[in-house]
Amino acid sequence: MKGLTPIVKKVAQLMSGIICIYGIYIVVHGHLTPGGAFAGGIILAGAFILLILAFGSEVIKLRKEETGSSMSESIAILGTLILATVGLLVGSKVFFHNYLPKGTIGELVSAGAVPIYNILIGIEVAAAIITIFLALIIFKEEEEQR
Image (tube, rainbow, N blue to C red; front, side, top):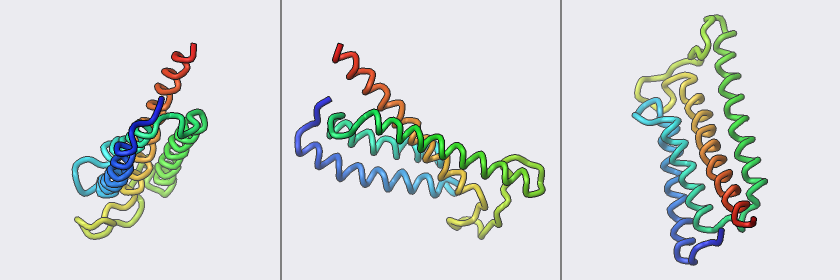
């Protein structure tokens, strides 16, 4: 897949930064506002997909990139399960127990372990969507080579 014009590439660079910051904002504030990990992860993936579409698949090594995003997805899932298991072992006998101290209601650090879960799940969702997108591009390019 070839890249697009230089104007589109520059606009994609500028917009992907703004989109990425917005996605991070949604993930981090997920326990305070509607949205959260899934919506923020989708927005983050959209920022990276925009760059891939603008610059083309020749700029990145797709097989390596797919492996990297798949690894990020696996590590985020493992981190979530470790945090949930720690909640089980802390003494409450509840999986996904919110065992960290809670802060003042309405502040960014006010939900104990929930923001950490949001961040890990946001990373997992973004990596999963990027992996799916890259797999579709690889499939398309392999079909074109035949």
